[in-house]
Length: 397
Image (cartoon, rainbow, N blue to C red; front, side, top):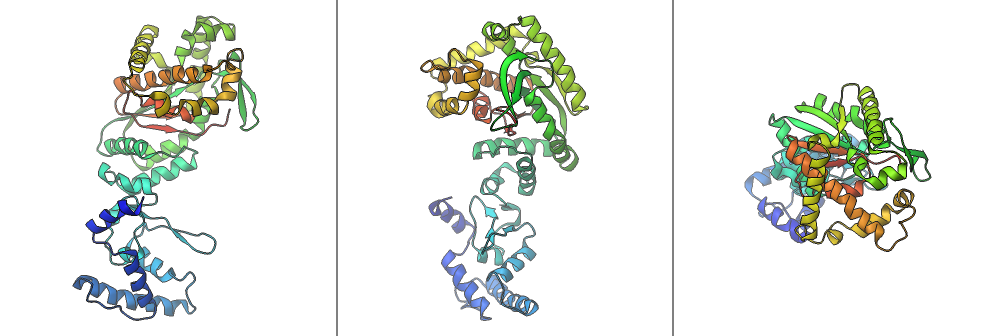
């Protein structure tokens, strides 16, 4: 956050300037209470107590404090148990934020920063208006990071916070995980596996397999620790990919054979999920193929009419195409070199993601999308829907 943005917040809460903070801390470190005429009576008394506490900590240490501000960190930690200081070579780094910025130490020492409004990241600290305890969001972000989830931007964080808030208020929640079919793969170069798209198998598939790796830890957090009322978790296979005659021809199978493979994958996912989730076909949400085509066509019409703005520029279609180029070259080897083909493919696939997002929003109560395919497609889920999306990193390319 820029200083210009932080200044009005500091003024609203009566936080001292950094210059004042440094001057006061220097005085206290020498055992002298600074001039008190600039402080409110309650703060004058606090400064006297701080001076005494600082000297007591110095006496307990028996040696000069290293780092210099160590006594202050200890005092603040006594006041704010969730105050976070991270060890860095040479100098600890404060990693506690308030409304998106780091207050100076004197703001904490005078207890001017509300306890319930601090968090370990700037983005989480901005979520106070979502009426979710920030320590809950901090805990969620820690677990998601540990499980390899991609970082959320502010808008994504707000959607996630609102979803958590609904659950804390007792509303039923739903997890939805769209996963790709079990396309053939081999050993990867930059990642563990690499799609070849030579055939379609009837096993779990790479995306669902990655999802199931993290599902126990995520359920431990959401259900066992936070006691969120998650009604169900549906893992939906992308059966709409069977509706493409070109896709079936490349795999040398019929649409019926494609769907039969998906039925085998559904059974495998059900067996491995051990009751944590239930697998199905995505177009179960819209009554099958006809419902899918109708929703997709409507979104395509809106896109072409400019109702979503300049999607290519807004969502970075060229950058997505470059990132997915190796995969697209294996999927469409005969077309990938054509000028503009990759960008048009991103938009076409992006519309599939937008269709999924809209159908999820229409059909599911309080959904959270938990996905494990290419995270750069995440913005398309919210092109026409306002739903939270969490992406796990991939072990495949």
